[in-house]
Image 1 (cartoon, one colour):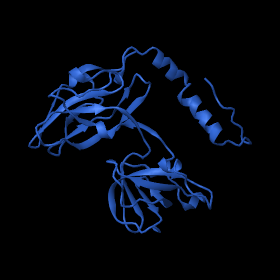
Image 2 (cartoon, one colour):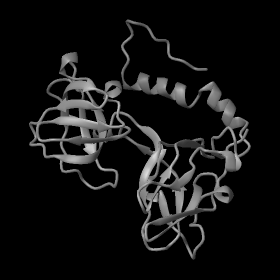
Image 3 (cartoon, helix red, strand yellow):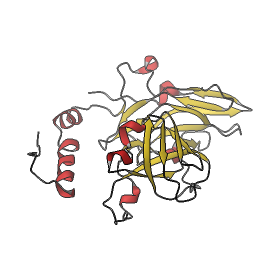
Length: 262
């Protein structure tokens, strides 16, 4: 496996770090080996068929919603569609069939949802602030911004410096930019800059990139009561779902689901 010759007195910048990332992600021995011996693309599961629990679609506890179990899909493009547990996904209440549709995408936000108040108190749900944030006590505080999962603009649309990290679900950000109370936000980590410099447009996209699914396609309406068009082995259908007055019907899971095999 290719590697970078790290040394304590070696200064590393963007180009060297990108090369190191390339060695780890593109030239990794295990990835090359597994992709080379793959027979079919799909859900990663130790047990295929009806006994598989990964990415299983079921009706959720709230009427008219579904939940999707966590899991992974390996695509023909050698990408990994990563799906955390999805809860309370609303299905339109119109009696029309929709398909749970998974396509690869990259996101820059962290897991979980956050809310913020006017004083800069940041509270998280299913977050782990301790792994990605550092406050002013480190002498190199990190900056963040907020996004909304549906693509709309958040009310708090500035760049905020983290003042303190209390625990995995609680932190404090500066409130210089007239914060307003807001919930159900996604947090994007931007990183730390030297004093007197500003984030470039590229940096504002986010410091970290994560393999995920395309949220805009997650529920796709049927075409003539059948599956929508999709690219085989790159995009994947999991199930057909219908909402009739709050009652969810899930069908076609065992016929639609495809599994990764080697």
